[in-house]
Amino acid sequence: MDPHTENLLKELYRDFQTILETTTDFIYFKDKDSRIRFCSQTLARICGFQHWREMIGKHDFEIFPPDTAKIYYEEELPVFQEGKPLINKVDPYYDAEGARRWVNTNKWPVFGEDGKTVIGIFGISRDITDQKAAEEIREELLKQKILAETNQERATLLENMIDGFVLAKLIYDDRAHPIDFSVIDANASFCEMIGVQDPTGKKGSELANIADHPATELIIKFGRIASGSPAERFEVEIPSLNTWFSVAAFSQRSGQLAALFTDISARKQLLLGLSKEKAAAENTSRLKSRFLDIAAHELRTPVTAFSLLLQITEKQLQKGIPVESETIARLRRQTDRLSSLVIDLLDVSRLERGLTLKKQFGDIVPLISECLDIFRLQAPSRSMTFHHPGHAVEANFDRERVFQVLSNIIDNAIKYTPSGSRIDIELEEATDRIRVLIKDRGPGISQSKLHAVFGAFERGSTDTEERAGGLGLGLFICKRIMELHGGKIGVTSQAGSGSTFYFDLPRNGPTP
Image (cartoon, rainbow, N blue to C red):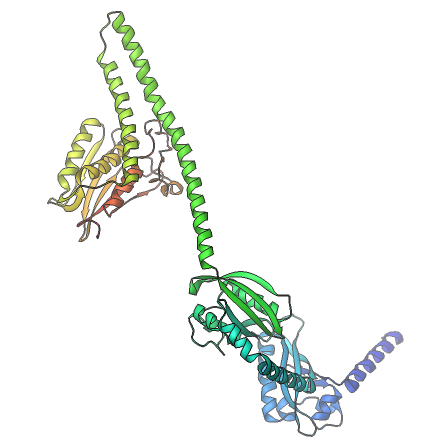
């Protein structure tokens, strides 16, 4: 080692010794076994040693009284085991004459070369006995003064307030982070708001979970204000109370604050209602525009076709050419299409005004068979099979409206099922309901579109869309009819694997 470096090290060592021998703080460094490696002369003196070097290698239980040694040992365990520092801990100690005094203690872990293993502890403890005594006296005098001068006035004011008032003291963890608060005083309105007769002395976390504001934001705000930050006004929701509060909080003294709680739930509900009404109005406007676009397109197509066919027929008749049966059939198809569109619109109108069902208790099997017979004639290229228990299956339903639901679903199945494919209709029964299932072999519905199938103006979007035209009201109407029956309607499907539509009917109808 060169002379310059050696001199620097000697100077550094002398400075280090000077700190240890002159500081009034208790400084100490312990090894992994919690034994002293070095300490300040002040610490050695209160332990009865002439020089700090005599403390080297000693354990707390060898140099401190048993009660304080136990405190020091136990508070250091998390530092050694978890590598967590101990910050601003107030501990007792005994001076050289045996008098009990107080220190503010901070202890930090010392890590090894790997940066993870704790190999020791470095600590500094500073005497705060006089400060602590003065603060206690000051607080007591102030408390007595406040009680003497304003007790009656404050009590009268607080008890007559509509708003809830609470005086609270913050509770901190060992890192000086606020984790809760304790109620010092509260008025009747606050007690009524939280549903507790006397919250004095209770923690916020005990008061109907009032401290469980999302991410403990309420505690964080209270902690900031209690530490001396400016007063704040903010809004919080306490889910356990189903209540919104406007809170005005301001600092009282170190670690304490006062807060006014105003119930604003009614205003929040009004704003929420207005927001929902606005969203509903906007949605209605969008649906109206969409409806007008779809209706204009769908009505224009058959009307245009009908007009062209009539012109052709008129010219043929003028020339003495008889009208072909195919022309008549095409006119009929366009008329039927117009009729179907108008019927859908009328059904939606009736449902919105309040459709009255004509329910009767009866067997649904003949109704399904009748519906299938009609569709077998209309779509002979599809194989339709009805699977049922073989006996009467009774429920309470409106025959005409259930026939309408069944027809709509089977018609969709025919539209989306390739020629020559099979459509299965199944009937299941349970104690309280029956279920009708219609299974097709069509292209299926992607999972992203299943949720919208029963919405108004929803139509197919596959390559069969041209055959599946219309206003997109059919399944929407079916859903409303099932709801009026007290039943439900649904679909299971996967793109490329067909779809299964089903509807449930209660055995005895909806409960009055």
